[in-house]
Image (cartoon, rainbow, N blue to C red; front, side, top):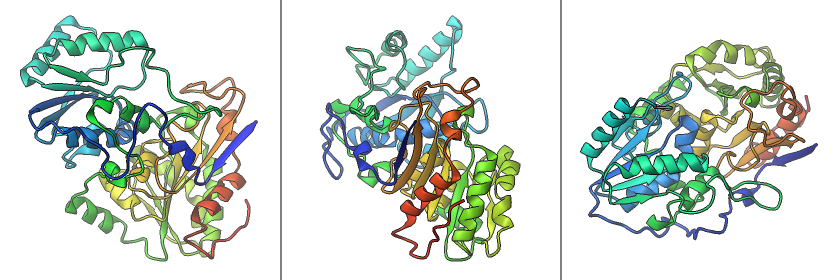
Length: 395
């Protein structure tokens, strides 16, 4: 069993060959003549967030265009729609529902006619890495929409191929998406302006008002949410971890974040925090904040703890320190948080990279083998430059 514990291993974020990345705003090929852009991007919270640098690049390349996103709308309340992440940002102006698994010829024709009525000058393909046959099908569909230019469709090779280093560490998904847009120019993952969610005053005020009860030297944010069973670390581990953190950071507050249906679970996870002598206040915001408001609140936290999930990517987008507890269902690197300071705990077991949403046979041995002690060590490494009085006790 191989363990990967990386408090700040920036090599995971170094651009792979195939894209020239420059500092600052990068080199962008601006085309002010384009009036309408259709962006094809499916997914929910995390998928939208890792596309932020690409969306900023598109907005800079086509500053005068109306930008519409063809995207799936959520089937579960925990899977936030792209609009919940991008509203008010100015990166996307409108959204067109794409029914996943659409098979009805009549409904497909209706969608094609509606999109042709939009009359896109440019279509940008920002899909995940599907099978080549799916890409070919998508390409045929997009070519019926009448755009003179389609960007991001792989011309050769299998699009499932991802760049990996000799250790099997994948490039960030955000970088892979940027590689598909090289005709628009370049952008750097290290430039935080490319992750800007463009909060408005009301969102910042809402976050500030909700956080008012967390008086003290500071607070941590935690979210237990994940749509994938194999990514869950387990209630007992979170209880034990938070109990020790409460003892080692006396007076610090704890913000619990997530959907309304996760409220009871988060309360239970914080039970040992509440029972620890000297522990700071606990604030359960599950169901109280919209995704963008949660991100504005995370921006005020000393660090965020969580699984591979949408809330984790929200925290990374606002450059909050992130402690990520990862299963090995995916190869390391691709979905790690992109932020200045992070600590990722990942065990490379023999079945790593299985991509299973639900793990039964192996009983989630990759993530369950991560101990509370390892998570605490990762936290100490993450926080050592900001809290000199942090304790060093192990669970």
